Image 1 (cartoon, rainbow, N blue to C red):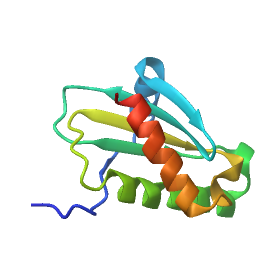
Image 2 (tube, rainbow, N blue to C red; image 1 turned 90 degrees about the vertical axis):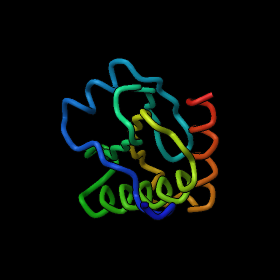
Image 3 (tube, one colour; image 1 turned 135 degrees about the horizontal axis):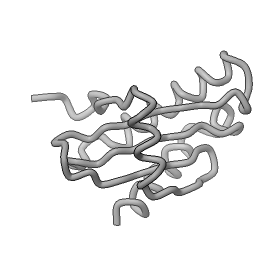
Length: 115
């Protein structure tokens, strides 16, 4: 049995990101954009992370993605979300926003998207 704080499965292929963008629900929050869809096909929760060059250089993009991954790991711990796919898109403020606020915004976005 997996630990409750283990990271969720990852979306890695471009086709997966595009499929979710086409049919998923989109929510913009301070610090990120969330795309969510209830797949129903898979058993596990899958999450993808992305950051465009518009937000900064590689160091800033990687910092933003690391922060999103950690926030998602903590917020999703203990939630049973089978068949749900999520994509978190970093924004300019993702790398600098207070981490507790980033987590709160992510929790609110998940509640809205999956209600």
